Length: 619
Ligand SMILES: [Zn+2]
Image (cartoon, rainbow, N blue to C red; front, side):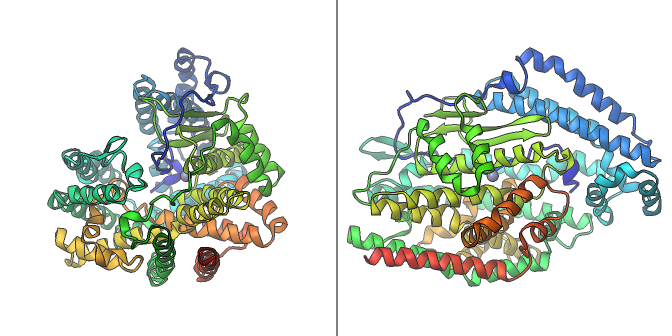
């Protein structure tokens, strides 16, 4: 746990979708001006590390010395100074490494990260060891500790789950052998599968790397072949995948129990300030309302039948609409689109986004067509003392690319608001789902704006469907995976899930609640093997559930009464994370994270939007 004192860069899982049309790479890119905002040159960055070293040394002086309120304050302040300096180096190196993955910045960044982690690792355990009465004494004697109240509580709530120092040190040392090898194995198995390519009139396409291109291909035979061969490839190593997955579950459960949690899901949910029973009940309830996803698939099927005179199969879900060339937005048009799309979010938000995308501002790095050795996904940087920046590895001008800018740019804007408001470094990050909810809300606003302003009714419909598919149903797609994962942990601990056949059955049972296709498409039973996140970041899926539900909730509040919502939403963005998520949501937006109304209200919104789609289809 100890999330607040972890230096790991919070990552954002914005998955890059290969574009449908190749982009003319001649377009002018947006380039980040690293010299202006971070360091003048790679050498200057290396020289500046002496400041970071000094800050870490000051922090190190408190090792074994946190015996007064003043010392505790000194340690926390030194930690924050270290964090602020470190994040400046980290952002700079991360940006350089993403521009060119062969840049020495990549190794330097990894090395710096582990050095800083090692130098700061003593702090949380020492704070945990302070007896309760003594800590209270520190707090009444040193008024400067007041702003750190929540940070201290956040660390201390881990105390019933803390092992004696030597035991924890052993576990940390063995972590790669206990819990990290499973994902390495997963990648090895995957790399060994000869998926091959599918022949298309425009040349052969890679079944794995270019699967989005294949899934949205105009020819249904090509889509079908790509779908079957990808899942058959996974099935060909199902024994090994099952081995890696079941060992992931056992390792996570064993670690959780060793730390006095009933199981790994409970440990994960509690770390996010969620209530395990409530989270499990929510997932069950979402599965009971899985009809909302089925309804969207049915609307797509009717539409497909009408235009293609054929029955929609699972590989047709991303099929392009007949005779509708998809809009491609040149990068030079993106700033003005966002200027208009985010006008609805108020002048302050609009200005922040304008500044981010200003070609002369040097705070965005977006490359049309991408480049070899360049990271293809998107992310943002920004922290107290460092300008926020937006990176998009490959821009092809599709709606999805604009949506990535809305999302990642949303993270950058949020970081910028926190920094400008003087949020303490310890409160600049919080539970991922809350962080993600703000970025996802931007995507809903963007899709809606484009739908409203589309001149062609077919294009309007396209954007309304994207609203639903890309973000509207995100919470439910997330719930499908999170429920599968939750039941996987339960099944393994009861002894019901022991091998690939059991995993197939479990997947069929869970997925059938959200879609009619698993029951009639044998290959889909293998879906558990394709969910790499289950292996890479166990139990992360729950973030999509709460993040998606909250984004829809913001959208309702925004649509219902913009003038009431916006100042409160902005205040929440600027506040940072100095309280548990449920407290912040209640305080600023009067949202009850744990009440049934969250799901209920979202379902009303989704069904109303589905009504519109249905009515539009019959016209
Ligand atoms: Zn994100």
